[in-house]
Length: 284
Ligand SMILES: NC(=O)CCC(=O)C(=O)O
Image (cartoon, rainbow, N blue to C red; front, top):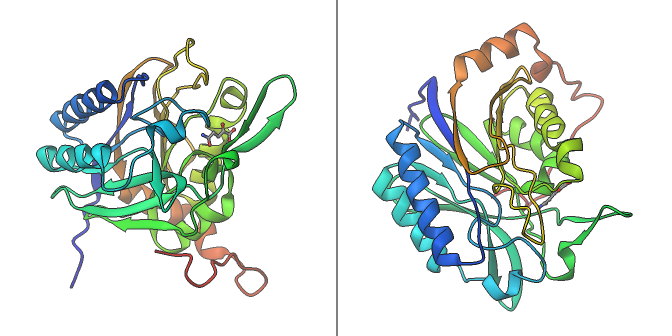
């Protein structure tokens, strides 16, 4: 069956102000997705941990099974707005383990995929930040892509963005857009957030969209903000500040094809000399 592909579509990124009240977070997310759809968006991205505070001390308290309250809301929101909804991430409980999980819903409200964060955010920058997701979370064990009428999309969560191999595997599988719900902080955000997404976009000559929670100086984990969309030339074409916002970008797949023709690195890899491969069972 031929998959109809459209050369351009509108993407929205919701930079949500997240509080400790899950019901409020869900309600705000629903309203902003509606706003985004009202402005012609066909794919909408929410931030990492959009339904609850981001922190190892909170994951267990706010964790849900999937399906559950938050993913039911996401399904309804996708359907009522007829959008592809990349539901940021939520703390998931399954079999007594906790995961940082992103669910994606189609315009019919059906669950398309669940991506569990593959690379857990374990860092220690002396005097700046120490964070150890692995103290409470279990990593995912598979790559996640989905097809839309516009293009194929690869999914990662925040720290996953640091791993060029993941982005390359998504690109080699045919993805033209990578989405990363994230929550960088006030140390690594100014240093690496934009650089990493521009690098992934340029490495693979595709679009990259990132969604951060809005910055809240009063929270225990202060998010950097600056949700963005980067084009295949490596340019930031849309960017939020630190505050709550919805940003938009028109993803132009003809432009992507033109870039790949002008600088054909995507076709010039020396597969006879090196390779980046995923192991059996790793791709969903
Ligand atoms: N939530 C995360 O994975 C944060 C990743 C991050 O801040 C980084 O520097 O990487």
